[in-house]
Length: 130
Length: 73
Image 1 (cartoon, rainbow over the protein chains, first blue to last red):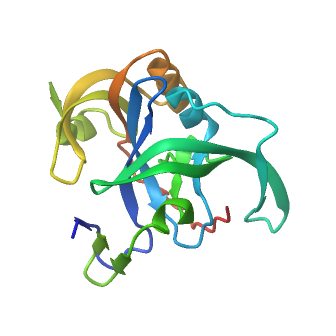
Image 2 (cartoon, each protein chain N blue to C red; image 1 turned 45 degrees about the vertical axis):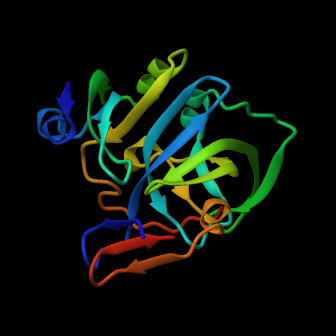
Image 3 (tube, each protein chain N blue to C red; image 1 turned 30 degrees about the vertical axis):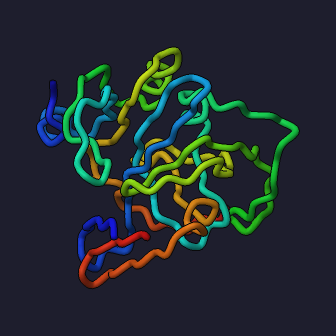
């Protein structure tokens, strides 16, 4: 079972995620926050543009923001998302406003995680995905 | 060829763009060719557009420094 280590007892788990756009022949590995509470994987617009992922203004979904309000955001499809060597194809992702000063380039959410059994051992700092 | 851990020390609190040359068994880059670095993440992503290959973008500073996170998506 693929296993990654993180700082024991931390409250945030950051994972290296490879995003691939076959049309452009480009893949980028970014650091994402593991977010088991998020419906979708999420990326900021800078990542969508860099990958060359088409953003259709007619394809949107509604999200609940941290301010407690609803917002319509673009919904895109990522050809391939790979974490710890495990691929998922055609993964839905939303475009969100994620400031660069967070040091993050996305959230790894349910649209990827639903394909896997995920174990997060906070006391020992172990993430396992199978 | 640049080793990722060296870059973290060489360019503190910056964004780094590499072309990946070597990954570990879990797919995490460990070596690469430095393409760009700086404080402006948007500029780095502009550098990727038009290129083909496998790249790694990361921040060398502390992630979510002094920030608590509650996201909904």
